[in-house]
Image (cartoon, rainbow, N blue to C red; front, side, top):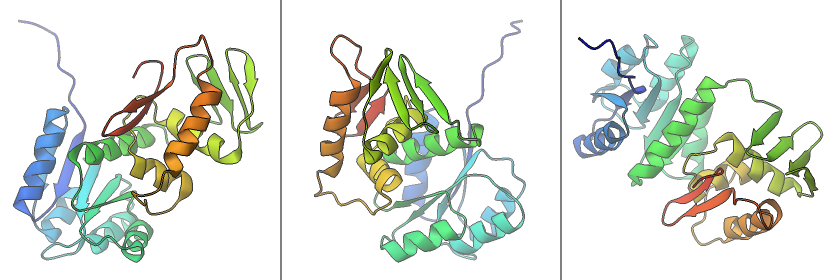
Length: 234
């Protein structure tokens, strides 16, 4: 008999009353090794989420029995800090703000791309594992000191503007993960993403020029149709 054990993936609770959406989430996450439980009722979802046994929760905004805002408010009031990705067809900025202020950690609007949903969850899970944000980050031969606000690569000091520094910090904290333009825009600029803006492409090009020095392995990689990945390997 083998004594080898198989590592179990993160356990996710999906509270979603639309069967098609729930199955889309389950299929995407299961394919990435997540263990997914699905409930379709707000009261049942709150009951299941209250024991804190899950690594993260995807939470529909509009639910029968008890709405998503009420669920996340009650969880936070009870001291349950499980990361919550709120998913809703309500896309205006005021609704997004209400969801985040209620205690949600991130907000995704319907319809959504499955890979963006999983990427957002992966970022929340990584953030939960490292609740204390490091003030010095190092990836390969690139180092950023957030106290001194200095950046060095291969011993060479790089001059970055404030926005470039925020962009680099966000990408380094989430190295190896697919970061969509929406995620980057919301994290770095704190705005609702406008698909017609080229702001991200402009800043990414400037950052690449400064970070990916000639003769050194590139650290910023474009994943066509999805977003960007930061790291020594794409």
